[in-house]
Length: 139
Image (cartoon, rainbow, N blue to C red):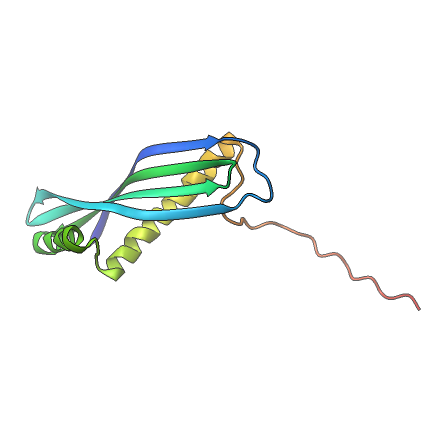
């Protein structure tokens, strides 16, 4: 299996009000469909169609959608699509690769878009902090 591409088809980000510390942030990612396209040479282009959403409590939300593209031998590609159409399932190792690709690309894009509309990061970012010298107890 070879990763052939990644494409966004939709960005929707909106801030409804100022984010409050009591607002909970939640993120969800899901594969909504798997389809294929014959590209010749006994290979199929397998398209994993996805949605990545982040909810910022009542302060706003983000939705990113797109496709992860893999090239597979025709028989393996057909097997992936048939399994999805029958049971809405696919091989765990394959799904792990697909979801990690989606998470990597979407987390970065969502962070950028949320910042543009004034929403906080949806995951903890590293921060620099000076260590304060310990005070010696007075005798």
